[in-house]
Length: 606
Image: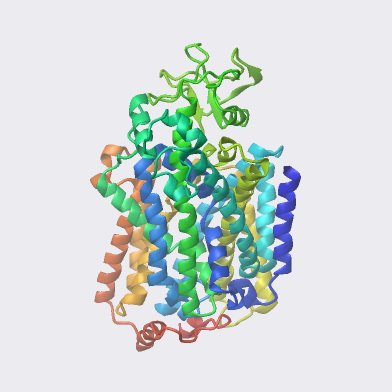
């Protein structure tokens, strides 16, 4: 398998070299030569991270209805992006999101501040993607996690350094195809086995059927969700079909995810490759469809794999030899460390119930020593509960092919899809970080002299890519707890800093640089202070402000940002007439870009 994976990585690098950038415009915007469909495929690959691919279905299978807020938030973010951000960014001809904000507010300070926010979001996000690649490689090959991270980092750097936007778009198209088939093919067969319906999005809301589903239903005609809910109640798990979070918290988390997604820098940046404002709109529409295709499959995988897990594992004998013994995939993933069984009562039967963890911590095995039933022996201390099963959430995606008894190539396709998801997202993040440093920050301070241009600009960008690649590799190999915990909250930072100035810049001409700077600064401070207090400095759940969790407080920061931006803009002088003209111009559909990629007009206007 390792040889096949290395061959796949080599193919990505060859594609990137073939599509290498020859001009500065190639590197930063792909010379604006891609069709809406190509941009949508590459953007979808950049959006669906390794964590989304591996953990989304597993997360939904454990939290149930509360997980819907992630699907609504992330998918809804593309609607906001399509209507409020991308068309105007493209109409302005801006290479980056900070460039657009700096031009709209006629301010170098706004551009630099926005670039700093983009870099913060991307640098927080990056190490997690590389850790995901390292985890996949270490689980399914002979590589260690560190070696896997380093191999992945080299591939990501090569793809970005070779051609920037141009090469990552071509590789992203291939990567989306891999992750789509790696997700959908086993899901279709799983749906057939448990519901006799080949469409996973419909199967999980139907009735149990098929060879496996009929056994779980025990001859009854029963809806999948009804059976799952009854199993949860019978075995002491929390309700699957009713939410446990407060409504206000769900609303704010959903808003945070929507606004954060709409302004997520590495996603917005992909659309600068569109040939026109109209193509940019079409690209966002296609992207929404492609992302929704996977996100609507995730609930199906979550529900069906959860029903299969409980129905086929609980009370089943572990030892082989009987028709009702645990399925083969259970033991396969036990060997991989994704599943573990601790026979607390010594009866040889697997007890999977909802009264607590089976043991403390993640499984630590006693080498290859086996117990009396053939299970791997554990070093972990038992937890005082009846539950005997540890089940890693990532198992839901990778175990589908074994559950459905599919050929081994389907399993390999799922692994390739997970790796493609991690590589594509990491490449997009590395590119947007590199661009923000070399084009926005360095470009601003050197714009009047115009010393950084052409091949020199590309080489400077490549050096920056190397520096950032070293960063992401180091913190992926040696993760710090603070960084690891904030990864999931990068949407809050994006929502509280970048989304308000983007929207106000389009819908309200009165918004000015002073208001934007004040709003971004206060919004960032509000969100980060709250998050830091409850994540790292001892804040407790009962202290949450109106019951809003740290994951949802980015929406509060967004509201504060908007309020400060409006108030300060009303107090300070109106923007220049040229700014009003700029806003009017970008609102006109179908017109040519106002700012060509090689013109740094912000510095000239300042």
